Image 1 (cartoon, rainbow, N blue to C red):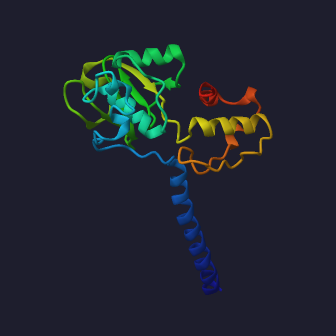
Image 2: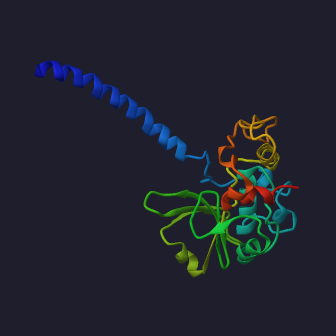
Image 3: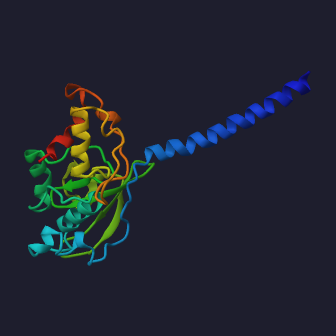
Length: 228
């Protein structure tokens, strides 16, 4: 009898093991939003960092320069020109608050601009121990480097202001419009929005937008700021 029970338990354990092995990677993938960190210096010929697309470069303040780099990095990761187009590093956080360009706060997120009283950098990784890895450039100094901080307030003794959440998770303005129009009209027209150009992502579910405007969380209010 015991032998029969053992023989029955073994396949059950095997099945559960297989199921768990499938679930764990899926969960890990679900937590990964596809953000690609930049941990090496950008080539000066990349348009986001050159006179072709970078407004700081165009106005005579190219890299090495923290705001020129941050502008180019935002452009690179979103595929759209940043809304922050002028000012020095110490201006960005307050300027963004006043203008309402992007959400902001004190919690680190990948793709966010970390702002100090005289410096900006881009959050590339948030590590398991809670430390934050940033990419940055330095005016009149290092062209590009990567640093990891356990305390953001310790960066060169400058006052830490907070994060500007500039990363849009791969959504372009054109796709954002389609998703909002679908929500406001049929709610089904763009349940799966298929990209029609390289500027749009391949697919994007609007599950989080299937609500009345009154119940859309504040975090989604960023969509409306990008409408023409």
